[in-house]
Length: 224
Length: 293
Image 1 (tube, rainbow over the protein chains, first blue to last red):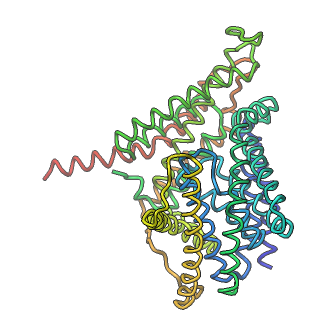
Image 2 (cartoon, chains in turn purple, cyan):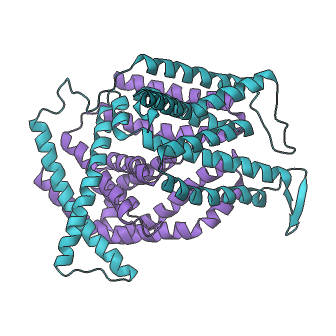
Image 3 (cartoon, chains in turn yellow, green):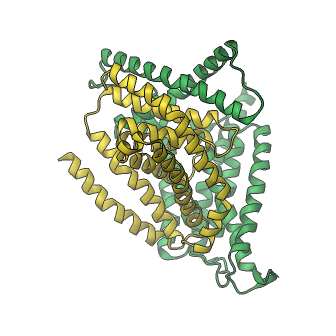
């Protein structure tokens, strides 16, 4: 019952917030709407997680996978764009499911931005990393079986991350979706997109097997 | 000195959200300039002088970059300044670029102040009741990170002692970090499972858990909250009435100077200067008391 009430509130809240924003901020309405939608699209997963009965083990597991991916982002600070965050999120999703993947991705964004700077881009990063984790969780079977598919998923997720984040760049700069600027932003981000894709592939190929082994061992040892 | 850091978390959260809301979404040049000024003064009170100078070195180039790229991409507007590759570079696009840069830098500065003031224990105090599981995960992850950093330094020292040096070239450095990282993963997961067993043994999930930090809502906080809400309401009403509408294309609007518009500017100016005013007031009171000793 409680669950349905919160879903109902959410269903009403999204259009209400968007409408109010559009009335209040006519010049920036698209930026506002996308900001809210990015934030609110993370909410269903969060709410579901709050209402479910979750074991302490799983809670701490998500916390430590999040901390590890943030740690990875911090350890690799000297090499710009070359970060293991997406790889860690994908690995978490492969072994602990979509929900854990989404939570690890979105919480990593919030927490690592305490170090790398919070800003209006935080909800977009939360959503982007979260959704990459969620999709990986849904494709867990084939991705675990084939290393080639895993590498392809890594490369695609680097591109997808860049494409999603550039939507934010354009909306925030222009207040509406300026297609020519979007292409300019994509083009100027091309080196970074390439680094994201390559680093995802490298990290996934290097980390997936050893970390997967560790995770499987922990799963059997502690009956997760 | 941070006078604003001692305010109740609910009040400071409301304050930050209202300033960010107005400065991000009401694109009016006067309001944006006020937000930038408030952000600069607030950050100046929070930081040491050296850090502030380093920040100028970061924000000034960013400002110029944002301001200059807009006229290169956008050719709207009716007053061409000069032509570049056959495309007009217009005054309107140039001014819009400057206003964009003022907004971006202003919001960045406010986010910086937010991270200084809204520490994680304040965040958890506010949201711990509403989202208990997520805030537990958040707080544990936040606590794990410094612990993991410490442990990863230990692991790397141990590996060095075993003869696993990292050379100068990049593949070697990446390999070395990978090795440390893999060791960290297994250590942290084992550690996590022990933590969970210990939490279970100590009765986690039972009722009546208390907070680490206690914040009392004093009457001064109430006054501040009221002032903040009042000062936020004025620009929002102004936005609904269309006072804060400001367009750059095709021609730059004039800045309104009707009494209503002036009221909006004054209210938001006061709102964005509020922490600085508090800081100055505290400093004056402190000096006054010291002079009486």
